[in-house]
Amino acid sequence: MVHAYILIQTEVGKAAAVAAEISGIPGVTSSEDVTGPYDVIVRAAADNVDQLGQLVVAKVQNVEGITRTLTCPVVHL
Image (cartoon, rainbow, N blue to C red; front, side, top):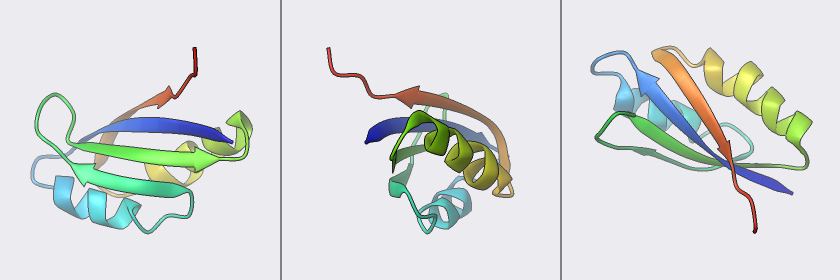
């Protein structure tokens, strides 16, 4: 299982709507609107890196109002 944080920048005023829509995507375990350089932080899980990439590119990035994403896979050192 691969876990990741997805940091999202949105159009002005769209953070709450983006976070709400993303929370319903299978594989997303949490979605929060936040303040700072990013507007939404998502925690996601997938069986492998390829499925994580598909989740981000095919589902998360297709949500209206998103301008940029940064995916940060969790590592266990």
